[in-house]
Length: 94
Image 1 (cartoon, rainbow, N blue to C red):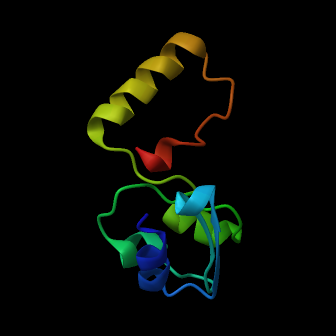
Image 2: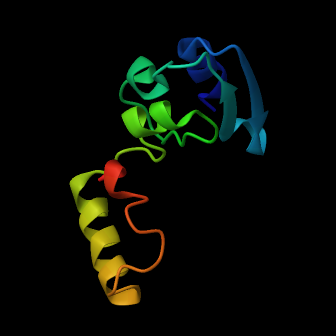
């Protein structure tokens, strides 16, 4: 698992490994852009708790690559054609 090396590179204040290192929970300082710090790595980072300014600036969900973004949009169009559910929640990730 890359868990220990990713946690070390993250410069997080604290971390917890779950799923034998396959899931890492990190606590970072306010305004810390974890995605930028880790660069390209195999996985994604979801912002779980932050103030509204940080959520607006960084987005809650990890940016999707173009193929996944197209698939996500197509699924949303089929299952929620009127855009009623969680409108705008994942647009920042695309």
